[in-house]
Amino acid sequence: MSSFPFGNDPAKIEGYRKFWNRVPVKRPLVGFSYKSWFPLDEFSASSSWKQDSVLRPEMVQPRDFLNDQERLLKEGEDINDDILRGASPSQAIFWGCGTLGSEMHIMPGNIVAADRSLSWEEVTDISLDANRGRKWFNTYIEFIDELVHRSRGRFPVSHGTLVGPLDYAVSLRGHEQTAVDLMLEPDKAFDLLLRLADFFVQITQEAWNRIPLFHGGYYDAQYQLWAPGSIVRLQEDAVAVISPDLYRKYLNQVDRRVAGHFENAFMHLHATSMFILDQLLEIEEIRCFEINNDVGGPPIKEMVPYFQMVQKAKRPLLIRGSFSEDELKLLMDSLDTAGLYLYIMVADSDEISRLKPIVGM
Image 1 (spheres, one colour):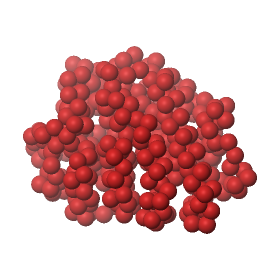
Image 2: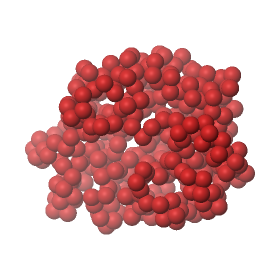
Image 3: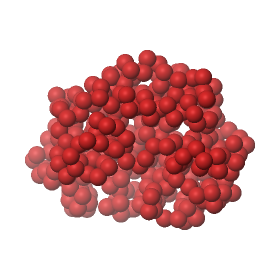
């Protein structure tokens, strides 16, 4: 059992530094977690919300999440691994979409931000300054402040789930319409994306203006990722609705614009985004790539070539998911351990015991 609260031994920071710098190491950076894929169900404050209804900001009481948050972090006191554990405002809620006016719909295990299908005339001032008064933004900031106060330096605090500029455009204009916009009204669509990129930067920086550094570094709680400099998690889940040509012509510049504001920008990806991975790797401002091994996604053997693409581009690679023993062996046989971080979701301590020898622990 760790003598540090939540297993947050400052000595672990050296492993993160080696990860970011892709220092040759005998084994990858490895973390294990009992957390589920459904953050809504992990907290009593949110698991009781009625499914198939609208979540209103006043239903979210940040202080009600704190005891469960500490309970979840305590896994780090029993799991002997390489990672620091921290917290963010509820990862089930899309805080940026809410700030821009989207309704939050409660689904089984998660929250969905509803598309609004606004006209161009209705998409007016989307800067953060114009939206500071929205209840979702105020609740987001309150959540951060409560976590910082509760932490008292014992665990790192981070920004919440903010998705990305294209996802915001979809929330404002709709999935199909956003793709049509880029083809038929590219000037308007590109201008909107650039303004949403600025909004994304602003709301991320707003959080970091209130969050103390953890042993001199920044942190992303969704992936338990410490960084020596300013951090942002880019995310473009809606990229699946556009073509590679449209990404190269428009979104490449948008993602570059966001990443350029932060020293340790990383991109969160799913298998559905691999068709533009080569273009994402051209953006040198994106320093690291996180790729999910999604439940129900392609077999690991089909994902390995994409993981190798990231490593050949000399970028740190974070892979998150659940893995069988054979799948983990395949990753260890196929990938360089330098700049590799495996964040492994497990069912119990017995599974950890079986997997640790495979990753060299």
